[in-house]
Length: 462
Image (cartoon, rainbow, N blue to C red; front, side, top):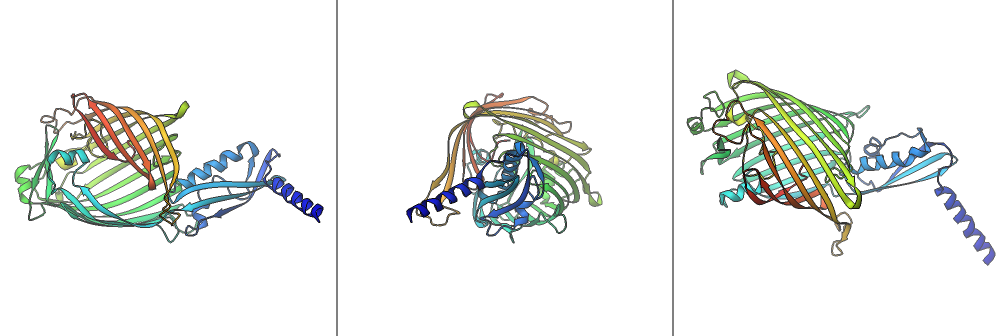
């Protein structure tokens, strides 16, 4: 009896080893691909990200590369905490299994935020009334099809109502999708001018001197999570109080207190970073061009083109280097103050967080060297039973960086000395990467103007 049991165990071990044995043929055929753990997510959402299809023949030397590339694509959907794969190879026939751990897809975020461009710009005003509060309700992966529904209800100094719905896959080839959105914004304050590269605000406590209402529809073309294009058409109605036109007739540059516009934008993104939240390897490229049309002579039309490229290079001993550039060109005439946006908002030279540098064109260069201090894949919170919430990743990076930028302003340059001038900044910082792609940054910087300070920000710096 003992001899039979030992023989049975030996047979099982041999079968298991045979099933997991490496491929020995020069080429293999993908016989099947299975998915595990995707209780909500549809299989086709994952299948679309594969670098191969069932039935494909692949050189054995390239098999692991293709499997890992597909794993990274699935992970960068940002629908899962983790993605792993395994496979068996038998006589050149490969069966692949991807195992995922899904995130929570319905979550409300309580909004308690500063009402300015960044934390330090808010802190500079020392006005506790300049706060926003409300709720942001997001339903990721709606219907298990990687669709997004977002509702923002915000009160306080800036009031917003926003609703958007994004559908990345339609029937057929599933390369096409669409998005729709509507937004209404109102605020007690308005930045009506920029002088000495500082924003000047007008405030009305009992009314809203600025109102913006917009609708956007877009057509999406999506090859995979790394390559996407979009064509968007937007309508925007803007209205200010008469006091703004008195303070600065060039706010809309027409003498009117309102304007209506259509805008068409075409964008293309090639995102080959290893992870989208805090990339350490790979590259990122995007380019876009758009044109604004103003109705009933409420403004002068203009065309804007923008591009960005960043390279991420892993180095020995857990050092990582990133370098990249960004540029914008805006063509037109009679630019309004509110359209004369360059550095200081979405794009900036670090160290100039308290300044706004307007212009029609700009170029921006950034580079950074990071050192991984530690990277904990998961801190187990035993008091939380839900496996989608009780494992918290935590990574810490020490970062040194230098930035440089230049704007060209041929319209409003006279009262703003930082335009048409090389801006340079650098410093060191600590970057914390944690739960649900959150990146927190504390950076001490110095700039060419001899300003120094500690700046707090959220998100990857470039």
